[in-house]
Image (cartoon, rainbow, N blue to C red; front, top):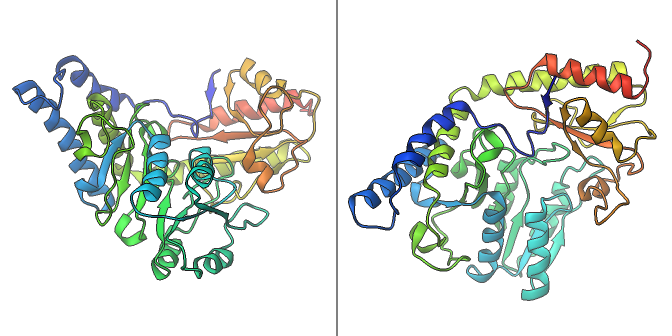
Length: 379
């Protein structure tokens, strides 16, 4: 039995998304920048997709810029906030994706930007009192960059509350929404989010396409220079079939989102209960085992075992796809910076299981059976 529980890394493409993309790949081969009929046909698909996407987020189509995915979008937002908007301080956290952390660290070195980490509690939740104290210093033009849902420990940021705090103190607010986009309904105007990011492959769309949302009050210059695509903000011939697939995946996700939330949450909590009943000494990282966490992610801290780096390999042999999150002494892999930041016991193996609407209880039961065998738990 093959079980795929690594949906936080990427999701299988929905067959309806493939169905929408194939005719574009086959027939819409014109360059959208060309003025002839084939070019106009391609351009029309892009703009139709942009308009369709914008309506789901209570935003203007002009506020969406297509990118290669979340990493490019995060990079561009941070870099352009410094280069084009005059940001001199970035407040972020130690558990952000490296697309944010490494970019902020580089900007601190190359542009003299003040790089500040907000405090976290032992579960990885942002200390909102500390954030408020940091924001009270308004001598800097500040960008707050905090992810909505953590990709490893499933903590959720209260977006609306943080947005209000930033608004009160004249700070810009960027949220890496890659893990939560199309898993929650996001109204960017209500949330006071100035910048957000999306990667289609996190919600059953194609890889290599996403977008950045930029509030219309702000204007970026291109980070990638060349042509005048994306209203002269992001050069490069557009990924037309990918954009069409992105729009279709967003449409499908919003059609029955609450049902999917309930279904996947029940699956995750079912796995939590089975793990607790099966493996003595098991625990969970962050708030991932709670109902109030990002419902697609469960980070499990297993009891010590002698499998070491072979733990994930042994799961794979049994047909189970998941991700690791514990310390590793080989090569350049020094373990999860997220688990290290929250003070997790790095000597114990941690595995991230992540779910989608295509996951089933039968698959979880198979995982539990395999884990019982690996830990030699009596039947």
